[in-house]
Image (cartoon, rainbow, N blue to C red; front, side, top):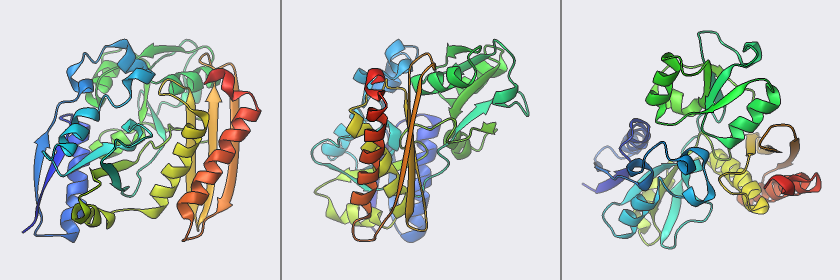
Length: 309
């Protein structure tokens, strides 16, 4: 019986995501034994109220992945499950993205009182978010709202909402789905554009561990992989950092990819939007997805997006 060591962060969401992937794997390999190893990352060890963690500053890249990747490189674990949007664009040498499982919703969710909707929030509503992208889009749609910092894991954020610190909060809908906790209003993905790779998981292995890589390729979802490729191509073409108010979303239907992206000024006053589409072929689907991403990035630059990057 083959066994694999899974490295994961200790947060409720990270463990839930990792166990979801483990369950998918066991469904195909019933005799597979998976050992779960909890690894504390810099993002877990440092105060969650650290402003650079909350704002997503560029020097925070990899704060939730570096220690796990080090354990993988040092052969202390065999694979890791990450949120795709936590992964820096460039994979460390010696590691490889083995699979992108089927994607859950990429949409952001507004959570407030039961039935609360973004368009019905009162003037001066206090909305919590830790993301500059979300802040910019909130201020664009609701110029009178007050955007306040929101930190902590999902449970902590919901508790702060319940305690009255905010009138509403905006979080990733996939996190609510995965934890099977209350849902709010799924925000329209063209009006309120998600972060690139939001809602997707990434399975990471060592590049030289061919047998483990081949096992996980059975979990790869081609559509999700192409969507992420297109969205990340926008990020790469714009040389965008974690603190850039950038959203990108790709959707594939019948081998046709539709991608849109947005760049905003931090105060939400300026919004630059671009989109493009194209057909994908089985032989070159990833290259074609990347090309569409580059095209959208150029459309954004042509409209002056560089000012806000």
